[in-house]
Structures are given as structure tokens and as C-alpha cells.
Amino acid sequence: MINSNTHIVVGMSGGVDSAVTALLLKQQGYHVTGVFMKNWEDDTDENCPARQDFLDVLDVADVIGIEVESVNFSAEYKERVFSYFLREYQAGRTPNPDVLCNAEIKFKAFLDYAISLGAEKIATGHYARVHERNGKFELLKAVDMSKDQSYFLYRLNQAQLSKSMFPLGELHKTEVRKLAEQAGLPNAAKKDSTGICFIGERPFREFLQRYLPIEPGDMRTPEGRVMGRHQGLMYHTIGQRQGLGIGGAGEPWFVAGKDLARNELIVVQGHDHPLLYSAQFHAADLSWVAGTAPDTDQVYAAKTRYRQADAPCHLSQVSTDAATFVFDAPQWAVTPGQSVVVYQGDVCLGGGIIQGNERTATLPSVNPGE
Image 1 (cartoon, rainbow, N blue to C red):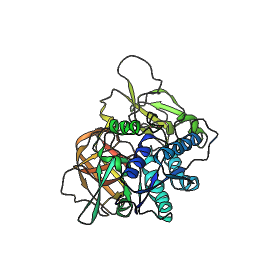
Image 2 (cartoon, helix red, strand yellow; image 1 turned 90 degrees about the vertical axis):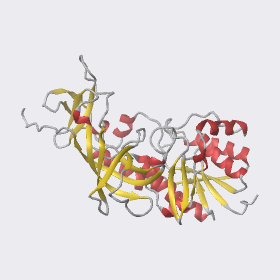
Image 3 (cartoon, rainbow, N blue to C red; image 1 turned 135 degrees about the horizontal axis):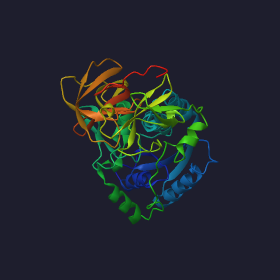
Image 4 (cartoon, helix red, strand yellow; image 1 turned 30 degrees about the vertical axis):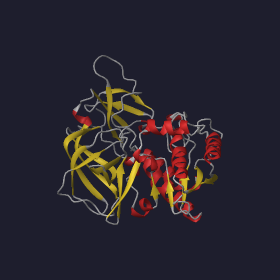
């Protein structure tokens, strides 16, 4: 019990990952407290089962033998995360709220709260690893590459990483489930949560309509042929295939761009249409784990979306808050608003928000009235 004087506060969501995180730390002899974060006030919505999640946390805590608290960060969430989420959609971009939620809520508001409780560190159920090397903290990919979540954590800084633990980083998901079953945790078979961070699963269009006005417009080809109508640019993202409602023979249709000035959705036919590929793009709002940008004379690996293989790239024109990413091979469906995350082997170096891209083909201009 060499860790008994070290107080660790675990962010517990009601899911199996955070439950096993608390279990492992308790078994290792730490003084563990669980904290359930409530960050969305819409409890009446059946798609946001916060009450049931908290009950699951209480049941797990009873089995493990730890104390649990509930804290409400809904004001911080709406101010720091949700307002940004809406602004990005209104501007025609596709944000990733999980990235900002981690940086602003789980590893800022929650971390501050845990320290106020006397905690030395916080722990979460993320699949990632932290390693200290020569006085610097590195963010590493998880051992289970199918579950690795370092992509969502790239905005964490040295101070945040120095206070963070990810006990599941060395485990595979199957092992986590098995540990939960062996310990008799009541949520061992609970389905993994999906949907918007802290808001949950819900009909996306209906949800956005509560906060943003519907602005229908045309769907057109790059040459100007109108293929149908959309109900709002905010409902679509680059590379989207489903939900366009474009029939006819031939290959499927995809979203290739947005003409914000004319409120038009640009669509192309075929997965490999040149307009869906970008060899380089600009990113801003950069965040580097080490605190400084990596060298520009090296080849790195990067991904422009979570479920994507790392691809070789170079960085150029790096400034304090912006950079150009140049890939060896053109990338498919690079989407403004999403994050580009840079790696050197298993080490996550950081990244930024994609602003725009330079496609392998150019969108032709269409004059009004054509």
C-alpha cells in the first residue's frame, strides 16, 4: 500500500472504462475519489441519461469501495465548448467538440476542482499514455491502437499532463471488459457511449435546429448543375455520402465543398473525385504538447480525422499560431474545423484546427444566373 497517501481523483462517467480506471488505482493502493461531471442541463431529454449514468457510478463506487461526488460544470461547458461548437457550425465548418471538451472541461475545470479537493493527480478512462522524459511529459498513443484516443488529447499542455494518469493506456479493451467482469462491476457489459461530448446521442439535425436557424439552399456540381436542395450547410461535412438524396445511375455522390456566400453545397460524383483530395492545407489555433513547435526539417506523421491512418507530412510556414501541412500523398476529405494531429512514432506532438485546403483540383467559379 505504498500509494495510500497519494490522492487521485477519477473522472467517472458511468461507463466501464472510467470504472476500471478507478478499480485499478484502488487496487494499486491509491486514495481514490470518484467525481461525476454533469455538464449538460437538459435532463428531460431521453437522449441525455445523466441520472442513470450517475446511478451507475454510485453502484460501481459501492463495489470498489470509494467515495463519489457529483459536480456541475454546465456553465463552463456552455461558455467554453458549446458556444464554440455553435459558432463553428454557423460558419460552415465541422468542429470536434471532444477535443475542446478535454482541454477546457476534463483537464481544466475538472483538474482545478480535483486539486481543490487535495488531489495530487486526476485520472480518466482515456486510452492514451503519459511518459516523463528528461523533465518533459510526453503524450503517447495507447497500446490498443483500435481504441487510441490521443487524437482527442493533443491540446493538453505540460501542466495538464503532469497531473494526469491514463491507467488504461497499457491495456486492450477486451482486457478492460474482463477486469470489470472479474471484479463484479455492474456496468461491465454497458455499451460504450457515443455522440456529442457530454450531450450524448440524439438526432443531430433536430438538435442543431434548437439553436441555429434553418437556411435551405441548392446542391450543385462544380460546373453549376443543380442536383437538389439542402436544408442547411451546417448539416453537411466534407466527404459526406449519406443523406444527400441524389438519385440516378452511376457512382455515389459526395460533399466536396461549401459556397458560404451563395449558401450552396458543392457535390461531386465518385469517391475518388479530384476535388475530394488535398495535398496541403493551413491550420491555425496550434497547440504543441511540449510547448514549442516541432522542427520543420523533419518528416512527421499526421491525421486529419480520428479514424484515419497516420500519413507522412511536412510542416512549413510555421508561426506562433498557424502552419501549413504538406502531405506526401493527397489526403481525402480534409475538413475545415476538424483537427490535424501530428505524431512522431507513438508520441503525439500536438496539432491545430484545419482552416482551408488546397485541393488537387480547383473548384470552378459559377457566376450568378448561370
